Image (cartoon, helix red, strand yellow):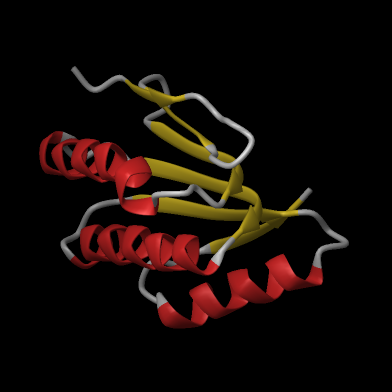
Length: 126
């Protein structure tokens, strides 16, 4: 019921949920032609998962090498939903993963960190 996977393409990230460890990974590049069409199934799944997930910690790894401005809005929506979970007493671990030499991605992660203080977004260099 809870399984979820979208394969990566040249313009879209892989999004996969691992039941073992309650881990969601989003990785690759994100500049789909139709952002709503691409991310709608993901957010439908996420809403259901968050509603039914119980008390176990939920971990999210965001490792995107390239994003466009529409994807930034999608990430805002994702982090907003995760922060709501934290505000409702749920355990969420969110990691922003970036290449250590990518100052732009680090800065973007820092901005998300400032905007979603209650979420406690972790900045993780690789």
